[in-house]
Length: 474
Ligand code: IDC
Image 1 (cartoon, rainbow, N blue to C red):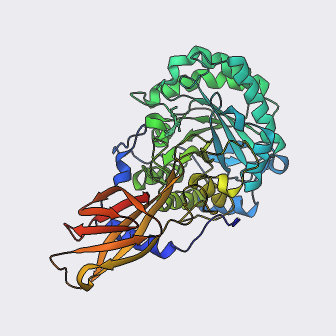
Image 2: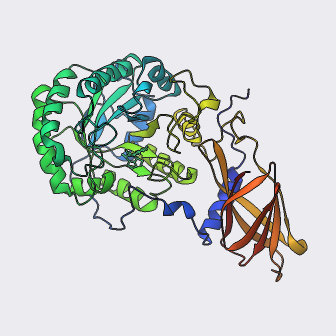
Image 3: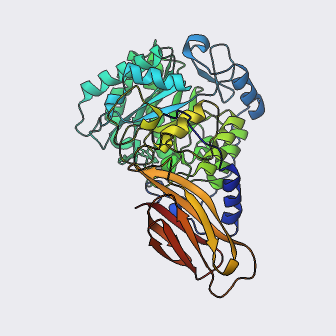
């Protein structure tokens, strides 16, 4: 079995694809953006703190020290708006988030955590929904959930990873909805974990709906003193409005707590330059920001992966020294999941057990920023072998097909191509034939008429720009 994780042969094609996007091709993936619908509002950059280390210094300190681990770096705190270790060195954490632990708790086990630590993860996030999916405040088994959190923090410690205990507000919209349960929970958690070297608290995942920063701040001002009574210096992550897309609003009206950080969450196929600009301006403005959740698909947790956008995010977070956790460690049949839905293992994953998101994370944690990821063993329906073999333009017309994205949903590989005319006068019967390595079906197409015939796709153009298609094996 071929165990290589990524193949990089399509870097040039991806770069060409960027040019095609700039020329105005439509982007069908962006239309599926729930729950974190993009808001266009722009916010003033934050100017709140007297940070003394530049982002460049942060990044070099993080890489100079290698991957920070609890056994060598000790407890983390915040100094000058930076995440620092027990000696005051800047650190950057990179790791993963579980899915809801009430739903996919089987992955919270010692072997699995050790394995992901071996990939290079130095932080695990335990996502405990408050409202949905057997949530802690909506009928979930509270004693069992607390027990799983205790075990999860220990499994992370045993695997030498930091561990985030995440109060996963989502469909409850406003953390104040369950503030009484939150007070009780955080009193328990901060007492339970006060002596844990590796623990970080996240007190509200994603405020959304009409929840404002003022609402979140007043919630945090209730919860923080409860935590501080037991644990004076642990890092506390605080969610921000609009699904944690507004650390800038928090930075403009900061909490008094010196070890609080504000979260920014992104999904690479939905959130691009605007949100990256928010991250940059907020961090460069001197505010403490932590990306406690991100995905490389769209904000629904599904849809196509955007590896170019993901690479831009990783480069930016590395430059700024910002820590991050990828969603999510589970085998649910959605693109964000790391484990293929056909795989029932809860540890001991072979590369062929991983989805494209899982393979990407593994490669990213090893220091690569993949521009193409495939299940490398060609298992399932053949993501490793389903390729475009040739393209022939009508009447000698030179056309090219640039692979913009490649992903897998429910075990089926999808390829998205942009078709462009590369030379020649456009004839009135513009069109081309694409021949694939297997019989093909069409998922979507735009600006052209299209028909599949065995392994061949016939395209009849109605335009010569913005032409594209998404195909999968029939
Ligand atoms: C999604 C899960 C999905 C689940 C849904 C609702 O991937 O299986 O059905 O939540 O519980 C977030 C949230 C995170 C979302 C994720 C993808 O923090 O809970 O998980 N997402 O939609 N914010 C932006 C995206």
